[in-house]
Length: 594
Picture: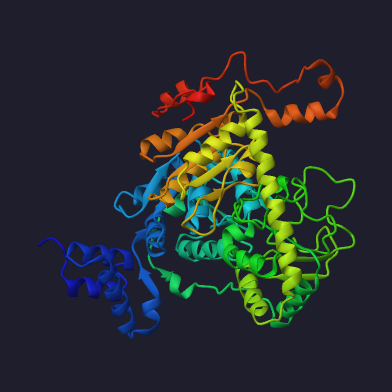
């Protein structure tokens, strides 16, 4: 222990900004302090310091731009860098040699790096950090960037480019306006102009990525900016960079919404994607029970995660897929959904014209986009639902109407589950394995607190219908992507496990989707990330085959579905996985599923 600095030396380094809070706590642990005691001590020391503004920033100098960037990431409590660097990024990569607190998670394809970062951000609630190489790496990553933008996942993406002294000469891998490559799929794009501005630009990127509606930010760095020495720069503390994004609904609006729900004969509530990111499932369950109302998931094409407990008697399945429990609902409320993400324009509006329509979302661009509204509210779902629950509990409610409505809803819920069970029973002994049976078997065997990452283009239907999901962080959680760019699932599952090492993580992925992200297996093996991957193999791009069949012309008549079949030769996913250092097996017999 003689090599460990004393408590007084560590306190002095913390106060002078030479030691991050996280490193201070590690030193205290090495000196014998419990983790909780080290945390308290750090808080007390910082609270007692009266040095003023110096306490909220750190002055640094005589560092390379890459070292400055590494120091920023440490100060901002970034633990993982997901990346695939190259020659342009050496100034940053070299700076990581002496930064053991920053773990570089290497991918062998940029798409995998992006997907891992996305899964990490969704599971941890933190902004994920990515480092890529030039126009080549950024281009390979673009599909997963689209997915992250669609899901509003907070990411900071950094990309190296040619040095400033050669830009404009058509140099190798030079790209004009590289920082604009993501176009509309980034919340903010910027080409860093000075090495001493690196902390300032990174701070801005982290802030923008988190502000609702959150999403990726994209920065490019000329090679020399990471390599040249910075005489002086300032890193502003995260504590001075906190933006209160608690978008509360006005009290008058909450009262109006309560009035509408109480007056309605049969309200229908739709639980959208934002509840997965911002929370609100718990008060939504309480509201459903208090009012006796039906709650459904968003339309299937949204590929939204299931956020309402699927075994709850007030759960009605998916809107526009499962039969509504009442064809004459008179109030429709979309909570944190897009209203709606669809494959094609419907022949008639999905929402009854006679119903009052309410839409609440953190994203003002979505509200009122496709439907006229009787009440529109920009705000966070958890705050709106919590305020509404408090308001409803103060009201006199029509108990007889609520009780009658609850009986109808509960009966509909049981009828739906019985219908699905009968459907699974009818195909139980089928070979190849029926997707209904696979889903039922999985539901019986998956841990109750598992993170279930799902990338199934067509078979997700069976996940929605047969897997049970709960509420809150302790229960089984559903993680999805709505962007539609294949190859997300494998990397996302790995990122989710890195974020939640204590929870089982299972990936359910189609055989077509799996081919787009298969390189991520290497990263799982390299970093010993235990993830279970279950491939739903139908030897085809089933979504394309179904679309051709529904088109109803020559393909349907002849059974020749051009560009859909993935056999001849069959892809041996087990052997491919072994090549990446991952063991697997193929299951064809339904009786061997257990």
